[in-house]
Every structure is written in C-alpha cells, then in structure tokens.
Length: 571
Image (cartoon, rainbow, N blue to C red; front, top):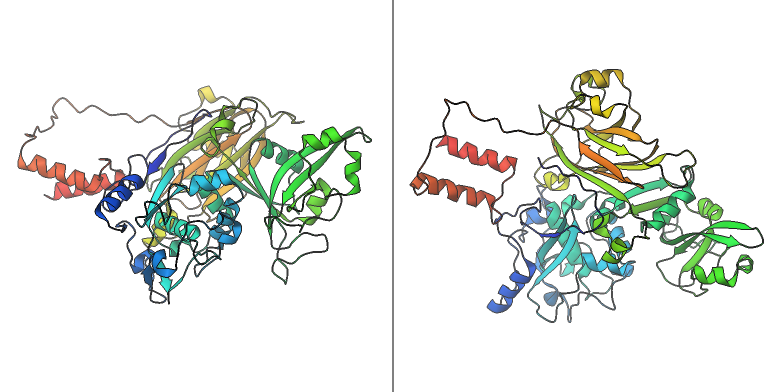
C-alpha cells in the first residue's frame, strides 16, 4: 500500500512508460513499452508493430462478455487512401461516437481540442502515417495521480470495413480512434468504457479535479467562485439541457444541448456606475456567428458604458468567431449546468508554474487502500469499525482572500483506482464511497490513529454530499482555519479497494497521514535466517521466479508478493 503527500508547484510529474517502475501498472509480458525504442525496432526490422499487451482478440473488445458481433481488425492504410493522424488540425468535429456507450469520453475528447496545449500533451505530435510510420502510436493519459504514456498498434476493430467505435467525420483521420484504443487498453477493454461521466474523462485527459454545479441551485457567491477558478487557470464549461430538437438554436442565440467553454471571468469597470460589472466570456465551439444576442453581446449598447482602456484590457472584439460576453444574471438565467476542471501542478505549463503572480491551487495527494480485516471499516453507521479506516490530517492556517467569513476553501475528492480494469476481470464496477471531516481541537494530544472513543463522542464537521457508487466523490467546503481529519471509506465494511484522495486549497495547507508509522520488528535472538548459497539451484530458481513475476522493473506489489510466497512454500 503506497501513500504519498505532495505539496509542490515547482515541478511537473514525470511521464511513466507503461510497465515502468512507479507507473502503478504492470504489463502482461513484463516488458516496459517505450514508444521510441519499439518504433525504432520495427523500422529496423521492416515490420509493423503488434501490441502483445492489447491483442486483437474478443476480450480486448468485450472484456469477459460474449461477443455481440464478429470483428475484423484493420490498420488505417487498409481502410482508406492517405490515412492521416490529423486532417487540418484537431477539432471537435473529429469525434463521432461509435457502438460503445462512452459519449462521456467522446464529449471530453471533443472539449480537449479547444486547448492546443492540453490536446498535444495527450496526443503527441511526434507520430504520423507518413514519416517513420511503423504501425505504432502513443498517447498520454492521467491515471490516478500518474501520467502514463500508452503505446498502441493501429489495428482497429471494424465491421464490414468500417470502424465500430469512435471515429472522425473525415474518413481518413484517425487520432480519435487511436486515442480511444489507448484509453480502452488502459482500462482493459472497449467494453470497460461503457457508462461514465464527462468529468471522469476530462480528469484523465488533464489530471485536474472536476466539480459539477447545478446553476438552478447555485452555491453562494458563485461569481467569486468562478473568478477564483479562472485566476487559477481552471477549465470551465457550461450547457443548456437538450430539448426535443438536438442542438436547437434558441431565440436568445444560444444552442440547447450544447457545451460552451468559458474563456474569461472579469469584473469590468463601468464609469457611469462608479463600480464593476460581473461579466463572463463564453465561446461556442462552432466558431461562427451563432452567438448570444442579449445584453453585453457583440455591438450591444451596453459596451458604450465601458471606456476604451477597459475594453482593451479585457481584449474585447466583435468578430463572428463564436465568442461573446454575458452578465452574471443572464448567465444564471440561461444556463443550467457548470463544470469546473481545477488544474493541479502536473497539468500546468512551466510558464504558469514559474510565474509567482499567477494564483495556483495548493494540492495535497494521498494514495491508500481499504483492506478487508485491516483498514476497511465502512461508514460511520458501523461505529465499531469506522475508526480503522485510513485517516488524514489537514491544517488550514490562513483564510481565503476576500472571504467575508474568514473561512478557507477546501475541495476534497475521493477517487477509486483501477475499477474499470477490475470490471474486465469480472469485478463490480464501483464501490459505494464517501468521506467525513472531523474538527481536531488539540492535534498534538490526540490518539494516533483516532480511536473508537473519539468517533463515538465527536460528530463530523462536514461530509461528502452522499455515499455513491461512482468513480469519484467531490465536495467543496468553506471551513474556519484549524486542523481537520479526513476519513475516506466505503459504505459497507470489509470492501477491498484502492483510492486516491486529493485536497485542493486556496492557501497553503499542511497535511499528513494520521497513523502509526510502519516498523520492522527485529527477530528474537533464537531465530536465525537460513543462509543459502546464492549460486545454488534453488536460489537461482527463486531469482528466476521473482524476475518472471516482477518484470523489467523488478518490482512487485502485495498481491504479486503473495503469489511468489505461495509458490515458494508449496515447494
């Protein structure tokens, strides 16, 4: 069980190769998949890459389910003339859903095209169907606190010569189909992608932490929340529910069933009012003149109230480019849903990271697990075992800037790890999870870990909105400065699973796991380890067994160690 805490802004996380030590994922073959090395080998041998880790078999498509129809695997050069990774760059029109219910992943892939920086981090430009083509491509996907470079071959599942799953409107463009294959490989099969949320995929493509907000029941000071998110380089999008007509153009100029990106949140000075007007700039991904027609739209009379200097400061233009401004009041009236993807340090470019004037989220990250009979205590309903769950202390020292109540913003996100891959192996998709926060009045003199007595006599100070069987549970809090204990748990006790706990704050936080440090107990004097000749046949057999299971990185997890020990003791 590996746990880490990270409070840093001066470096990005490394990009791990699949199977590499520290990646958190093992390959079947045990060989590290290095894109450059594998492509070089294929070019030298005059062969096209065939991925042994994601073979052209029914299980790669359907997981452990029965095949729904026959599949033929084909490479793009066999499907069309002049295949290309990109046709006239990448755009949202490049993404069309196929036969798997993964519109959540498709929508996020489309949104990813709105940011060149984020898009080309996921889809590297050092590959094509022309120069150095060897039937191999790679994509970078964030998985539970690690960026993984996922290698795939370009054999794609087809039916009657046509792609079955995600595709481009351009018949000779393949970045979206290949990205989907990399995503399916990471989760075990295409079928494992069935059912999910856009937030889930957006996090996997950015490494961010996503919040969903119902604008018909908005939190207090929503505009301030959006302004602070914008100042911290968070990605935001909003939408209007679809009506009887898909992507219906409304009288307001807006489009229902359509996602808009939010490109600026500003307080614009109005000389006549001697005050500032909260305005929001949005962009229609169509990039044309389908824009808002109300107050503060292009060429509207409201702009006459704004000085030329202020217009220049906010970059005001009146082009038919799909971008427009709205007042906060109109925004709340017209739109129904807001999604905010808060970016952590491994999602920001180096320029933003090194700019001390830029506001950034402070982030603490922990990796842990619920283990049956040890750390899987269930929710507070199971008081006798609740205290055995993992516990994490976080100290909030300074209140947020401009917070009238002198409180601290705290966003807590609890994510389950590797559950889609587990479903491919026959496990249930998601456990029912949630968390609770407890105020610690005297952190220097409390038991480690907090015991049954503490939880019996102390109610929670805050908790997740609900316990739910989704990949991630996220809740935003506003709490007074102080020390708090976060207790992540499953609803029922004795349910096994791994998790990632992320905590975002506006100001610096101090956090640690609240548990007794692990220790190695020395053996008794009368116990001596049996020494064995390292050159003996048995010693060499054990080394070979370890190497076979550990792979190139010579690292095993707890389950693999158990397998090795069982095999040794059976002999």
